[in-house]
Image (cartoon, rainbow, N blue to C red; front, top):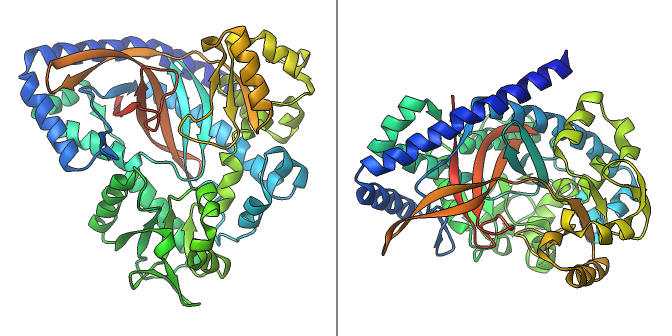
Length: 464
């Protein structure tokens, strides 16, 4: 029965692609009918005013949201539910298995952070999958488990489009629906607070904590404004400027109840001597931090090597294995070893990697922003051999190339007006406590699809 349901969802999602394509064509036709300059300039003015910026660069220069059908969302939800459930099982094993911690490349300092009791049960409280949707199928290539950026931007981008009268008419006609990711984030933070505080009746003060110089600081203000609009005091704080008196962690004299961690564990460890107040408060369990440092386990990209290794499938249910096989690309830790290839045949891994250059990508196990990635199909044999040699000196994984989609998106050039570009479309679902909340879209003209590497974002709306 479950297999039939999965097949039915896939078929429905594939069929709905026709509806999605028609919606896109209708939208582009609408752009030809309206006062495009007025529409574009008012849209961009609101995005600038609300600081939807990555540093000094606009996050969304595009004039069209990305559309996904309700049927495609159903497939995405089912796949993510299966993969997330398998990840939960893996986490429990990693926490109590030193050999798995070694495999994932967890350092001694990171293991010390894992030992800090979060005070609530969730391991991956706020996270984001990186996926590529192709009709009725999806591929999941990464899992940002630490503290993903972009959710505040996403809601604001959706609102900016929805505020345009021309778009409102179009949205009503096509029954487009926006997500409420910031709302789901707040509810998740409050859920952790309730468990941590054992049901405290007072409203917590929330601190969004990261280094002041990060380029995503504008998003922190968007989220703080939203939290405050819902009746919760919210501040933005640098971890180096926090104070701890043995009872309370504070920033500028304001006591912090919930520390919404946006500083990454690696960056925290690099400056830990300057962050002793935060570290000691966590160690003494005097502040509720979300995400806990235990989310680092799932942030390691080698978690996908465990998920796709049949030796670990006895841990998972049949449905979880189906989800893994359907959307997680074959992944192995890059090292000299005997293993199985994507078809399950025995191979010497390094020999296989050299032969299959056009179908493989090399990724650092613990990085973000597209740093240090080698695409085999973009290199010749000599370049690939050098990339493999370089990767073997560090902590890398190898992953199968997955099919990606490219679409035309309009954007506004203040000097020349309307322009068009073909972009790789990366669909990024946000999950809270392993439950799908909403989706954003990252667009790029290169194989790297992220804002850090120069890409842009657009809101994602559901077509019902």
